[in-house]
Picture 1 (cartoon, rainbow, N blue to C red):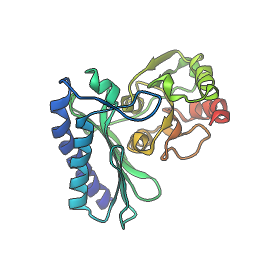
Picture 2: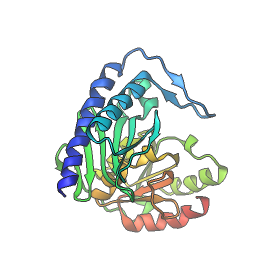
Picture 3: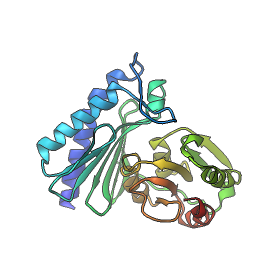
Picture 4: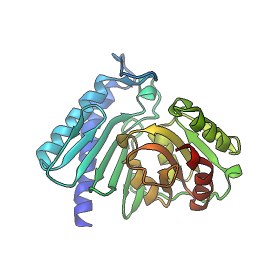
Length: 259
């Protein structure tokens, strides 16, 4: 527990450092680049500079730790511990001035992510998840009970995440039964689930840096987050998060064939 507290304090330092870099770029004129791929995947100077600032701090404070970041890739460390960074998760929202983005910071112990931070400096919200629980600005988070999809609020960032017809059809079969479906949100959707406002998040084509920080937040609030076939979500891919475990079990049966 002592080490978790130490690493949580350091993760919050990383959040502060990245916020100092990012905030001046938000709602300003930006030079936006498109990464490779058929789906529009923007990146800005804010993304790159924020990750660089966090990486420098990690290498100064914990030189044996590994780093995996969206913008600069993987740096292997001699320790089993790896920091997993996404400087701006939700860059599409960022470049059009919507505050539905956040900085994701995770610490993986070689088995699983044991610490996660989602920091939104513009709104002043900091979500933290550890084995002890999950919090928003120090206030404990708890998912809500929702055992039936017909009563559920479902979120997904975009249909473009579903890279095959089978996956899109599997998502649609669930969405057709939900009470409310909302798109957009990126990391914010998972934090709303942890806060008890959203019941299900279903996505695909995610990378480890998209999801690892969110796992301790969702699980710390009492939710469950896995791949569509029930395996660990930490490597990304097809992801389902639920606030209610019984609903998760039902939806896995509907989605696992499409993993």
